[in-house]
Image 1 (tube, rainbow, N blue to C red):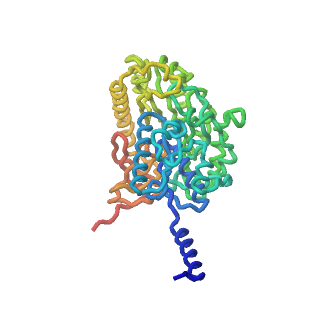
Image 2: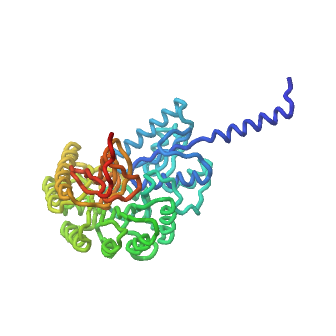
Image 3: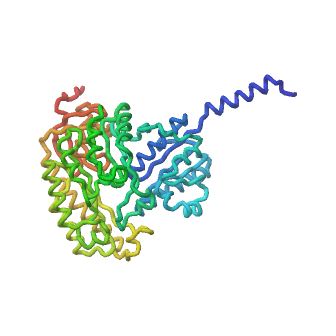
Length: 456
């Protein structure tokens, strides 16, 4: 029987309605560092502005993997994630898989050859092309419009992209390109938008935050940027990460000391301290210069907490070099410290050197450093017992509300734990707490002004 025109019309309309109702969801998976978190949030904000359904690390018919290519472990995790999602595609659980980020930027030809079932690969500067592939338009006017994947009261705040430093071990310039600062006025607008959306803490990130402004203004402008951000209403804490020690802009120290919104906290990756290793790493500094810089930082900002990171197992690192590093850490007693084992990265300056420290020795040295730091952290934390700190509550986890002091960054530093069976605090609030006890990396506290919960 021949269908009537009205019937055909209704069928077409019903099909159109079905497609519009069942819009495909895009699931963004983020791997790697805080810079990748920021990039994923920008991608998701652009997709959302184009009317797309987007989620972060949940379920969706379309998967976008934002990869990391920094060191071997990160590359392995990225490849494994790609393979897992390709397998899901082959099993019909997802329809398309796209890959972006640092690994894709650096190894795109190899990935296309080895994992051809990925629908497309994109580099770190291919956001407009990726959006077009996903059926979205890149909107230049979206200053600060992101989909926050962190708790809504804090946000990573990237002030520049790329790096001009010549460090021998680092592949970041290969993946992120040359340093490019974002203008101060644009960053202030982005901060205002974040504040309007409930963000109270800005975590300033960059490949090298101390290089900020040189490309735009002909001089370092980090101090001016920090002052401008402190004027943004609604932002209460500003925390500085990834400050390169060579040619450190010491004018920022007065700003940190004088501006109440700036946390007395500095993340300054030193990577090593033995002069032969520093020279081979092309860090542009010496042990004497580094030690003098740390002394000036502590003198000009009393009470500042310093976080650093170290690399062990670099080519040619001797037992004497490693002992010098341990002695330095014992003397300086950093509040926070992270450690990486050296990763032999192709196309870096150090790749021409022999990777002569055995893997087991690298790991042993890393373990030794972290054991030493754990003891230092425990001792420093015991001194906090009985003290009162302002604490920002991040989340509830099991029987505890978990927060941080102004001296702690998310995921990598101390956490403050408040027993939720005894006290109630609200996520996103600032709460004065008294430290009751402490271990290596956690502080246990009670709210100063809260009454214990009544129990039946």
